[in-house]
Image (cartoon, rainbow, N blue to C red; front, side, top):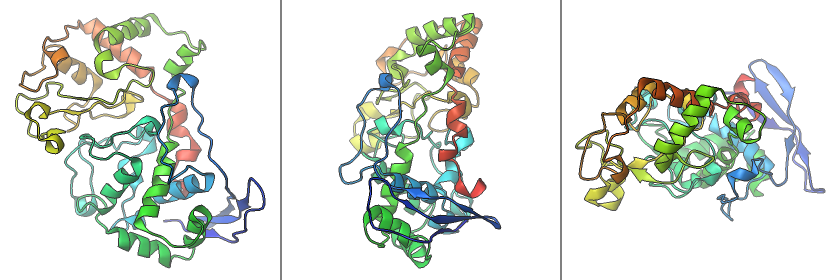
Length: 349
């Protein structure tokens, strides 16, 4: 892991302050000044302003900087080999291309790794919505025995012992103390900046891209058949549905939290932003392609007492219609997002 060294930390004397920092990337050194001040989120007006930023964790430029370093910091795992970025890879829209992610000692998670995109508007996290904030969510994989497998105290100790990190925590929090809570806070700050809003679909909405005939047909079919769950500009509504994967779901989904039989097999509806890049699909990664997903919804939905009502009757799609929908879904791929250097692993620059 590349070390980050702050060569000086100065008191605030202006609205913007930079601190010289050396990033050791392999055998080379580069100068990477750390800007400070309030971080300004950049997103289209049609995304809306129903965003969530806790009052006790305002987003700052220095917080996002440190959060990005820690997102890719392998020392936050028991084996010093796994980071948040291991299961959330930028080129895959912050998923990992596996049905189940591999944690320490090659242990597998029990659910598919969700894409980290447009989390600034999200209020429930994980497939079962168990966490109500990004800060709370970030704490779970850090300490989970099947994921990063290390206590927050141990993680904090590792960073505290590295002379390069305390000055950065001071820049963010005012003193050099490193805690699990602070680690989660800056990771959350970074994750809130992962905004995807430059796809061809966005360009179409801005009248700068003209869709093909197939893409337009797919858009209309999508609107008629898929808006129940994936409506809106962000193709995401904070809902939990049983989408008919099994007659009796082995994974109880949100029912684990609610205790309600009617919630069995209900899972959070994921965004379809960058869906072309995030296979395999569903909470258990059972479908390897978009073709398989559409085949499920067109004739293979399984009935159960908790099946969401609008799926009681199968969607009947012809082969050509399925391909048109896929053409539309590919419009949601955001190349700028997956190549944005501000989101990338600083150790690989």
